[in-house]
Image (tube, rainbow, N blue to C red; front, side, top):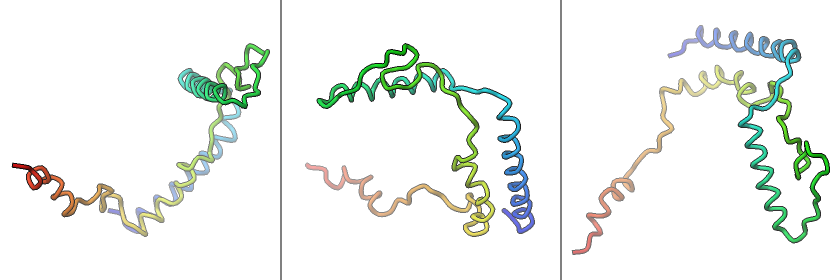
Length: 134
């Protein structure tokens, strides 16, 4: 259970973490060259092949394969693409809202997202007995 004091601590910690994430993004991330993982590259290639296959099956296909062997038919590089830390993801954006939402709605252990089963569920459980023939 949260109190006003613990929510104030959460607010302050969130502000500090946001500042640290921005500093990490501006200083540390620029010092490293990162790229897609092999599984991300493979998934991107699969999506590209699937898209190319669909495009080739359409009658108005005017695309030509690239002459560059490092570029696939979709015009994308064949190898891993560069990746950067992305602070604009929703999970980082929403961090500032946690304390406010706890104040407004309460903690997440006080409610459930499980659907409530009413009379219809009970009827469905016994439907084979109710509608049994013979």
